[in-house]
Amino acid sequence: MEKRNDLGIDNLVKYQNYIEDLYKESGTLSQKSFIDKTEWKDFVPVIEDDVVRFLKIMLQVKKPMKILEIGTSIGFSATSMALIAKKYGGTITTIEFNPLAQKQAEKNFLRYGVDKTVQIMYGDACKILPQIADESFDLIFQDVENRLYPQLQQDCVRILKTGGIFIADDTLFPVMDLGEQLKDQVEPTNQFNHMIANSSQLESTLLPIGDGVVIGIKR
Image (cartoon, one colour):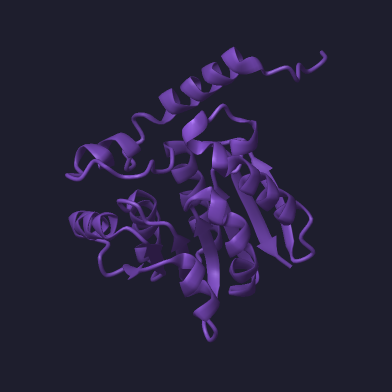
């Protein structure tokens, strides 16, 4: 039987709904439950549940001891990773520019008992990363404004250990209907995707989960 390759938007939505329905009773921390318990609501969007499941699997396979997250928001992705990392002694450093988001993330880390596993650095990642000289990470997860992605790419690869994993969210923006508000994110994302795809330092691919996830391993 010939395999059909024409997914179509309608079928894609059906696939996504089917997958989410499969995992709704899994008992794992979900985006909705996390947001419902978060007091401050004026935050940038956090990752989808399918991306969380992907991150958790990667942590259980790789067991990275030192994780860097760029873009904390209210702490959903960091909390989800920390619940896994704390079991094997891993730690997470997460960078956030918005002080209100940082404060809320700290509350959420306490709520879920991962405040000893996660450390927040307040500031601009474009200024913080170049200053990291004597430290390297086993896994880096990037989820900030996409216009910053090309600027951060070189330093992310530099501070990633050989064999380390680099993951970036929202990488399908160039082919999504984002509207005028996020129009300025399209070209930087496209530039970043080409940088990663053509990098001599990373073996990578782009996965169509969430709003697109790039994953690479440092050669």
